[in-house]
Length: 93
Image 1: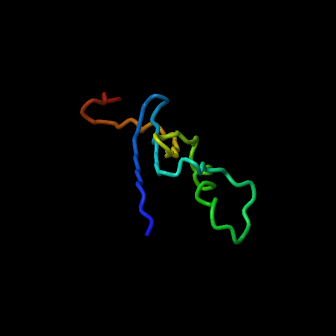
Image 2: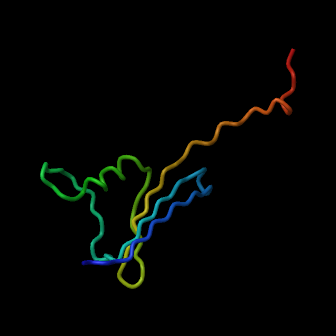
């Protein structure tokens, strides 16, 4: 049985508007993700990263000590629609 550390993090930030950042870390710093250029029908890897690339606005990797990596992806979220509060909305004739 193979056991390894796995870490998942979800955060939001407002540095460029509202952004959802997803980070997944694992101890395989020697195996960096590569977006496949071609998918063969029997390929057993690469489809997940293709989905990440298609759905997210940005993604990349960050090295972690001592020999691990974090793969991150960011999605820009739309600004929330302003809510209309009847108590603060002036009456219009």
